[in-house]
Amino acid sequence: MIRNLLLASLTIILLFSCKSQINSDSNEDSIQLDTEFKPKQIQFPSLDDLPITAHLYEVNPDAPIIILCHQARFNKSEYNGIAQRLMELGFNSIALDQRSGGPIANYINETVLVAKKKDLPTDYLDAEQDIIAAVNYAAKQYNEPVILWGSSYSSTLALYIAAENKNVSAVISFSPGDYFKEEKGSLREVLTDFKKPMFVTSSNYESTELNILMYDIGLGENQVQFIPEGAGHHGSRALWPSQTGGEEYWAAIEAFLINIK
Image (tube, rainbow, N blue to C red; front, side, top):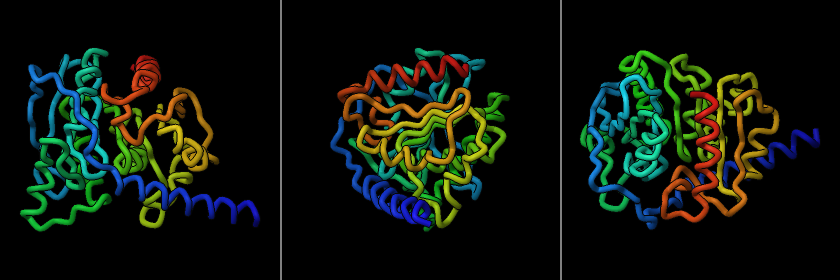
């Protein structure tokens, strides 16, 4: 009883912290982009036929494919520099504009604009169908399962989807939280028997809460929780060149990707 009450209390703290972090993300950080490199812009339908706009970064049609999902209030440009570095590592990627997001710096979220014109809801869970559609689209285009990568709210959705979708071979999750527990069931339960390769990480501050989330799961082969030695950052922007400490994240990501490639 005491243990259950403790876990319940910690879950409430985690829920509050994660939602506060999601909603406090701002656009104050600059996005690093090689302006001479232009990814291919593509579109494909979501599960409800809403057009999803995305950037395709293709190094080789036969290379593994990663689906890159942005954090709250952001868009596909969150991955401008990240996707280019993934190309150098030999990975194709598709960076999405999910319908739950917004502008960052001078970049807009085109899927959000269309969703609002169609008077469609744009909450976090509404974007789940966009991610599923992207996974299925890429798996069909490349004729192989994809690596699914999420940031903040989308990292939680990525874990749910990876547990259910056969078109996901591995998942990378930056700053997940159990904040869809009421709607979708606890991630702790969803991932208890999860065997696919998994990389989860966060800022150093968030790592204690992430430990709570992973408490009953345990890590198997090619499953990693990376805790930065430095302060780190929330979400995939921890990898931006402008962020202090990004290289320790990159070293861990590269090691993980090499192991599963």
